[in-house]
Length: 171
Image (tube, rainbow, N blue to C red):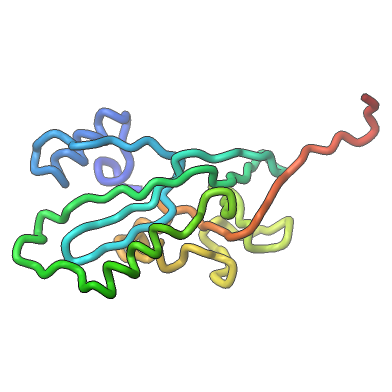
């Protein structure tokens, strides 16, 4: 990361940088708390970001954890440069609404520190994932194009759970 660009000493410093960069120095209209960015859709007039607002964390070997998405939220923001641009076509608008209606909660999972797309144990880093298993590859592409792919988790579709097994203990 770059200090002052995507790495900050405090939340207040990060919020001030966001306010200056994206709100023209004005106050930030809304703050959404979440666990992870799941993707983004950029249109000619707005940006829509999919955020995991609730997750269930299960332990994995080696101190890693797996997060099952419990609840999501789409966050919309107008683009400052959108003045004079045409709105979405009816077809594109309907497609965006279908995407936003798709159920992610309960049926998708990720790990922030381990590559879940490969057999265990995998020596590959999280971003060395197999794209055949990455459900949000297209939704993560705006992060990739901005050089911020690590800010958007590698999301897998399906059901997953993890349980710690104690060997040799009774009770």
